[in-house]
Length: 284
Ligand SMILES: N[C@@H](CCC[C@H](N)C(=O)O)C(=O)O
Image 1: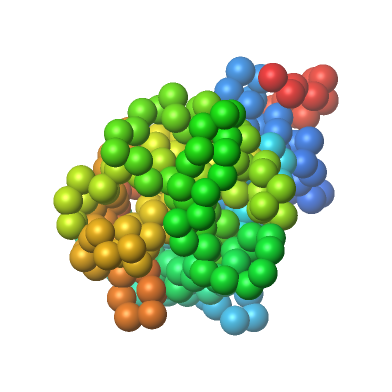
Image 2: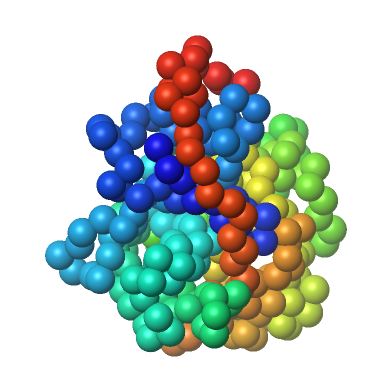
């Protein structure tokens, strides 16, 4: 099976063209391909371009745990670059259908920078979803591993839980992320961001991704966290998001419509051998 690999700020994805598949990818196949020792290794798989009745293209996004994600900011930016590299799009905007809604992508210049109109961020508990009475989930508290944390929740098609702190480190995401991801408040589980507000135009994030674990960057996380910072009145509407893997530019428009811009880098292409799928299932 042929694949192409890209990364967006160290958030790496394997792109598989549907024509490469003789049968549906199973969760087991996805776990094996994404495994960093027993497979190719990646933060997820992008399956497309698939036919769409509402958009120019359709994309399916899979997490390394074998689950399917509704949306991915870096995944979408990488998919835009993949379409550009295949010659299927040029510099004009085009539309992509995802499980988390339709988005618009645009490739700039010769492909180094990609913009995605991510759709609208909502803080509504019913949409995210977060259990309990319907409300905007802002500045609530939870006790995790013995520590009280203040959080806001948001959706940009996929669920996010943003924790505001004066100082953040990778250890915060790695220690608290697994507990928050699977907390019973979040029936669909959640992505988790630890956010430090640097000034009115800059935030810093450490990220624990649902179904993937600690990652160096995330586009939907950046969209959600920047929206929380703006909603709380801590930042203006143009925000640079600093992550261990690099920076993304977020613009928050009226009604919390989000534009996301950043770099994508092609890594390699190759062939996945059948042996990857027939070996014992790797869960470590
Ligand atoms: N890396 C992504 C997010 C991928 C999906 C996420 N793990 C989920 O399950 O929602 C991004 O850049 O947004």
